[in-house]
Image (tube, rainbow, N blue to C red; front, side, top):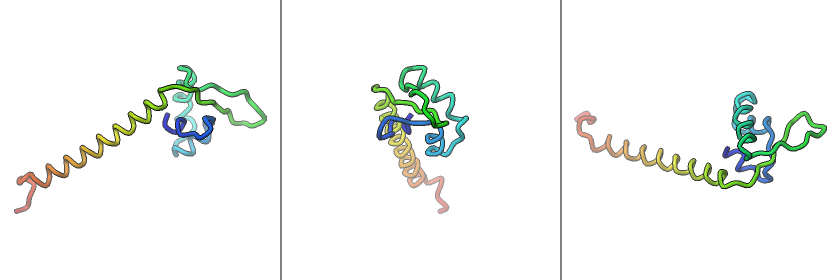
Amino acid sequence: MLAVADSSDGIVCLTDLARALDVTVSNLQQPLMALVAVGLLTPLPRNDSRRRFYLRNPSSAWQWAAELYASCEDSAGSESERDRARALSDPADSDG
């Protein structure tokens, strides 16, 4: 979802998303169709290209996804810092 949200013009295609995320196209087909099904993406009319393009529809869901990701990153960083602090303060872990 974040890769779609980060698209500067709001137009994405499956092949480009897969390349950007370093996954196979088949791994993104169902998630992309789910975004279409809930109305977050609209398939654009086909043109001469073999690629199928989708337009990102306006929605607060895109901002929510970015905020959720940021909060997970913050939590992961906080947990790592807490784990380090515990390891440093736990005398059972010292070799002394």
